[in-house]
Length: 326
Image (cartoon, rainbow, N blue to C red; front, side):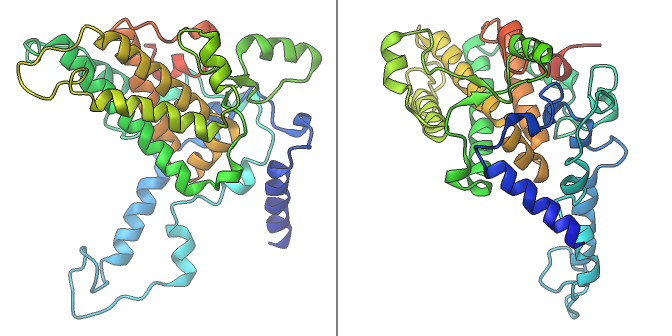
């Protein structure tokens, strides 16, 4: 046990030591968001099992809403408490091992794993929910798009708030980065040195030298705050996102909708960097991240916003697994 504890401590020390060489990190060829060990098998949902176990343990507690007997107090058995935790202990051991190609998730094996939560929203179901049907045909196109834009914004903001409660301010990355681009990974394989999370997002969109200079010194947390605050201002603007029946959407709505999707996809991409994704994974929130990002990708594709260029996107390897058909 002491060896395990020391191993975990050493791993944490390594993560916090910026002077440590990137060569000691697991290969970027298989980032954690593509590692099958980050996901539960479809027939072994540890998160749901843990929730069920907790509800069973609480069923005898007189203060529990699940209690069937309010005259008796149930005391937790400390010996079984570890099996109830929502944080799987296997991650501190199994994921310390270097991943191999056999751990890679792909379009061929993705159905074996729980990649997105909620589980009742599959790729096809989510895609169908975004596309207008006979029942929703009478809804204005801008209003239909706006409802999905708002959902992605709130999903992104919720993940940000969750990470803020799990990660100390000093532990966030200095720069607004994302997973390494495909071209750099390919070049790195030739030299056997693949940089980790090396893509840095500029602020400007569309490119603007003035904006780039103004925001170039922002930390990742400042960048995320400014980006989501901008999105919030747009959504709160009754001219851009009208709330009264019969009020037409502003002519600039599509430009703003594209801007919100752009900013949200940058923020979500940052959450896929190694350290942040591992925090989400440990707390069973990475599948929510995948769901929000899937929603964004499908909005971009179905509404033809053309924000995502797969060939140049840091998550070029994850995108087809999340949203492409067989």
